[in-house]
Image (cartoon, rainbow, N blue to C red; front, top):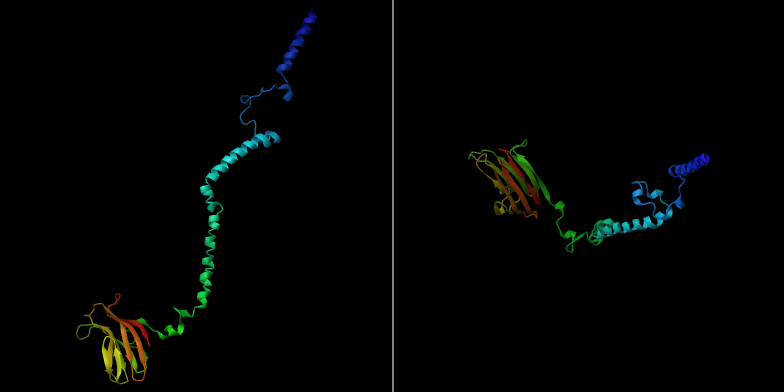
Length: 264
């Protein structure tokens, strides 16, 4: 009897041991009943996509993912205002700014560059040939200069035919004035001139004032004349005289300033 009881006890305790001390990896899907494993039985982060079977990922998970992608796309599509800014996304707008590139109208502005129609017509203005206009070579520039300088109080600035243009500067003359002027003189009788003075019959050796100022000593003054014209019997013609004269200008007290343009 004692042996039988001992054997029974050992058999029962052995079964309990087997239930409470299962070897690792000894339970498979066959031992689990349906619904036996729930979410609360799974540790957080224990199951990741890399641990799931490929079929499961291909079916359920990717379907879910594609649904969320659809949402994401939708929100992007919704931003279609921005996507339409596909103008921007496609940078199409920027590429389309091919209107900017196409500003080939600008680049080629060829319409401008080739404006060849214009380039081809480069020799005309308002339908007139360039010979109808006065060339720049016909203009004589008189760069600005001051007197008195190393050359004294007078300076010849231009000669043509019988005419001579002379600049003069007198500081603090006998009348207590500063004089700055440009005169014209002729070596041919019966010349004519109109400027600051007007002389219809100028004798040989005669002269006239083109432009000038005469303020009290030390006082700034300035004048320009755009109406000078001179002609001589020998056919010499100076059609436009645009000259200026000043004194005590630009903070330079005791200096006369001259310059301008002559168009023979």
